[in-house]
Amino acid sequence: MATINTEDNLRNKARKYILDEIENLISRKQNKLPSEKDMANKFGISRVTLRSALSDLEREGKINRIQGKGTFVSPNYKNMKIDLFRMKTYGDIIEDLGYKQKITSIKTKIIYTPDWIKNDIFGKNGKLIISARAFYADNKIAVICLDFLPIYFKNDLEYIKSYNDSLFNFYKEKYNIRISSDSIEFHAVEPEDIKKVLDIDDKFLPNKCILLRGFEYDDKGKAVLYTMEYVDTDYIPISTIRYR
Image (cartoon, rainbow, N blue to C red; front, side, top):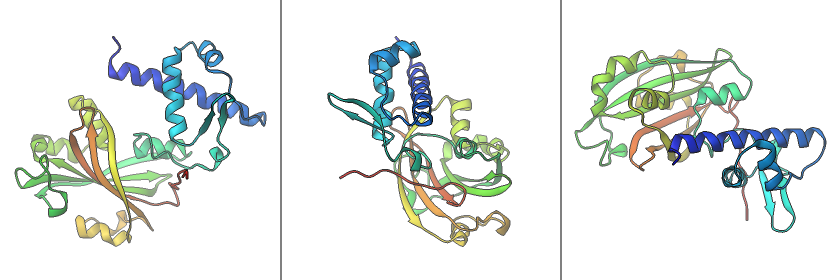
């Protein structure tokens, strides 16, 4: 029986094959994908895996599947910017957008749990860890992430302070915890609002930003991280497809 990671890897490979096929179609000014059977044979994957990847892409608005007619590239495909439906680190997103990425750990410390973040995981002991990171695009700050970790990670405090990567990778590499879903809210904020949460040097403040905040969950649905992500949309434009 395939493991979760194996299934995810197969689906991600299928996704890459389909996206490559879409780019080829666009270059030829076509918009209809081959049949599921033909794509499965061409890519050397099962139809079950292919359908799973197609379902993801349909949910994201990248393709349209029409009963009895086939699968088509969405007319909005080229207008979509970043993919909020997939769990990718900002470092990966920055690279996908063609920038050179760099991640710097700014500050990490233990604080009392704010009233607005308390839940069964984060509020039991009255304290948690806050850790700030800057994500750069071509040496310009594109994102400031404030990550809130449960206090039971306190033995890793010094390690986290010097960890110049996304904490998604920290969870996976050190504890084999895979962050697989989140629940986020969007807020209009000023860059200076970051300092109301954590006092960081002004040099780390983005020129402008939108705030994405919410809980991150592991494969079992347990909240393992709370994030406040201040995104400069000049570097990471955000768009989505809406349906009626």
